[in-house]
Image (cartoon, rainbow, N blue to C red):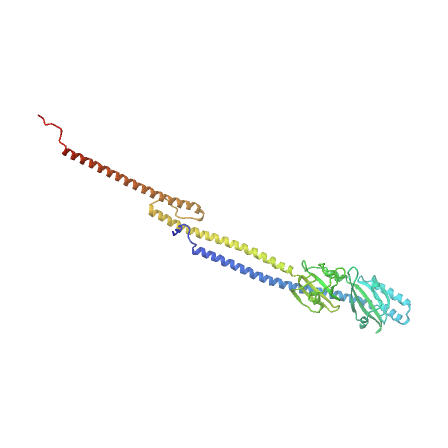
Length: 429
């Protein structure tokens, strides 16, 4: 089988070109390794920042809720500290006079009108029986205090629980004992609206697109939010509040009294994986949950990864372009060297075939290669013409030799004939 001759112009890749591509490969590998390291570092930093953000938000929201609760307790103590109310209730215990009831009602109406947070007030005697009430929703107050409400010591404010209106607004109930000169004369029940709690939960500053603050209270179904949630559509309760029946959910975990941070290991009332931080409010037995979707956290990581990938592609493209230019430059130098060798071989074979370029640059490659081919074709045609001339001379010389030989033979034949045939000329006589 015939072996194809190696091209004199194009050869195998030399060591310099190999080194260039090896350097580019190492550079690109280093860049991708650096990108992977930066991605993992950014992921860790974003995760830590997210955890710190959740912890700080949960702590600040828990402090805000406790501040609201302290304000409610101070409001109850302020109403219970009215001297005329306590004295009139003591007189009623002795006389059971209806005028004392009217006086107590007027005092309660004055107290209810002094604060927008007060929904209803009621006074009870020593046995916990209803005496008088006042306020916008006074009809919601029961006619008899629950037994545990009478166990409060003097000066103590006891939290009774939370209820909901038809519109879904929360109402918190407190009770406080009333005493005159250290002698208990009855009890005061106060119902306050939870508007400040709802306003707090509707503020989503720092919680992104899916984050929310949830305030959770115990319920017969497990737990319930005290406010409408940010993402409605789950199992609902009172006009937007949500029942939390999952024992492994962040709401139930907050009610257990644990203070923790959960990095995507729990699901909320929608069944979505969330990052959550929990706190417990011992004054009311409520749980505080600050959460947002784990997908939102991953979105930040994915966005950073896409930017790093775009940067890596840009740098890789620049590196490959530089490698191609360097390889092309080295290839042109080698082509120049081979073209010089071709010129020398043409000159040694056919003599001076004209002026051949002594240097080939990258920009003159397109012009030089046809010139080299022209010189090669010129040398070949010169050789053909020389060979033709030599063949023609040999044929002329052979023809001349044949002519000389024929002339010599003719003369010899004529000489022999003259000797054999006598002359017809007669002697003179």
